Amino acid sequence: MNRPRRSEHTREALITAGIDQLSKHGYHGTGIKQILDEVNVPKGSFYNFFASKEAFVAEVISHYSRDLLDQLAVFMSEEGKTLTPIEQLRAIYHYSLKQYASHDFKKSCLVGTIATEISAESEMCRIELKRAMKQWLTFFSAIFKQAQIQQLVRDDISPSDMASVYWAAWEGALIKMKMSADTQPVKQIMELMIATLLTNKE
Image (cartoon, rainbow, N blue to C red; front, side, top):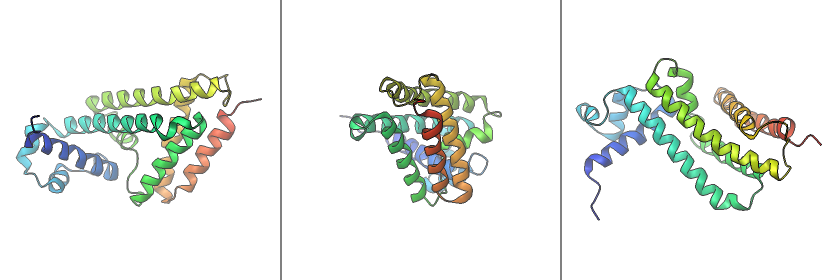
């Protein structure tokens, strides 16, 4: 088996550092120098991998989305396999909140952070943001579809619409979390969502 080239390791390290810095500081608060310093790579090397900061951030969004979807797939095939759809939703958001709290609330959803900053400025990043959102909504729609089959949620709203509303509430709740440095408001919002909007009307 051929070993990965050093350049591939460097590229992956830059993307990983980009996810970390952009999740904390956003697009405008993150400079290329910050990322290079974290990876200990000279500035000239950055442009061997990425044509611009915009191209780099688009790649980071894509990588972040794929990684999250991979984690969700593992969860659904392992510990999530025996849970009801509602329990799966709760487990996913509780896990995410635990991760944010472990970083002292300095990080949040990278896609949500970038979308509020530059989706209207960068067509390249906007395309990646839309692709990531579409993939995530497809994932959550499948959960809501199963919830409807099991009669755990109302059936007068389509699974895709449920996923859209649920995701919008989640991203809004994360903004409140960063403002308060507390996960409790998010838990209240998400549980209110489950208890009022989503549960079976009967």
